[in-house]
Length: 532
Image 1 (cartoon, rainbow, N blue to C red):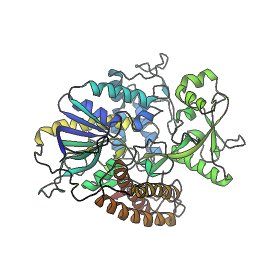
Image 2: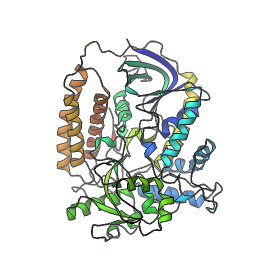
Image 3: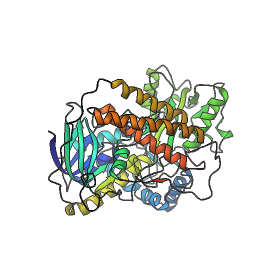
Image 4: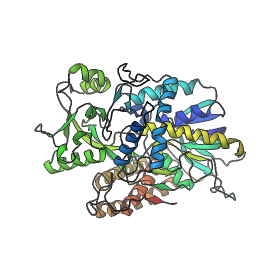
């Protein structure tokens, strides 16, 4: 028999989006927050760069931020969403300062907040608010402290959502509405039922679908898959951002080297020490990530090399240590002194630009269900996310979603009777190797066939393989008791299928989707929308 819990709002995910939403709601609602592992073990913690924001009442600065975002998005950004996000950036930073986020200061910066601003790829000006080279850690730990201290927020660590409970799934008439979620206690293995007036998905992206990624192990597309199964449309899943500079080291496969290194003068070099980015774009190392990642991929394939190099050793040692203290210490422990030598780097899957379709308040196609942050598709990022717009999106849309939820919460009743999670017809598996094998197969063929450069033939191969995996995993899921690995694999294969289907539909090259069969961009940019 399942344990039952009730709350006003269930927030699935505990990164910048989820915790910001919880804190914004907690003054007026009882909030439960689910975290797959420890509260801060998500992608936010590892975000190094910062938050893009124009801090002054500067119309030209705001228009410049909008223009840079639109250009990076390669014609697919929704301009109204970009404008909404950029114009609310200053308020988001001010709120973070109010709750105590320790951003790096600079009294000579010229902005009223006295904050140091850096620059990253795609940005025409310095507008990145940061906390040294560990901005995500500073934001996440501050949000965590606030959430743990709030009496209206209850945190459930090591709890993983199994699936959403909706009126349609239960056969109830009328508009499809979210009623709660089934949840797995990862430590005890027991299932739970959460009754909620509203549910928010804030689970992050799905870059773990690829063999090489900068993301933590938790980025398995859970929210996108659950939203899809609940009846939500998804869009633009073909746009997977590959960060150009992940440290190439056998013990540190996910260590990101922030864009800000290039923003502060870092150079990309071939093994013989020559620069190459100016051959691909006049902005050289400061071109948007899709251009830089493709250039690196092309040079590696052209020369048959395993990595290229990122070099900032021409800067003073004191400058490097003060601007990138965490990266300096981490790489030094691995045998590299970035003040004296270049660092070996490769591109790796980094960010999911598509996701569950929402409006500017986070509404999805299912009543009462919201999606915020990387799990969502708002139209902000278009065909390529510009650096440091992701944390900004989390903050701005969590705030607008909280306003919407609080306006409507009183009109949503709590469903008093929800069925237990049914395990009456399943058994314990003695074939866990199936899960491990399928996980490895999925991530390998996604990297090989649906990576930085694609073709129709590669995508067709990937679709055949993912169809077989879907059938095999669903059969396994139906017959054996659930485990965290099985739930993540089920979600990953669902998301992989959505990525492949979107990529097959896009008969052009645009932004992060580059195909050798259609190397030019179409004259009319359109989103790729899939309906359940």
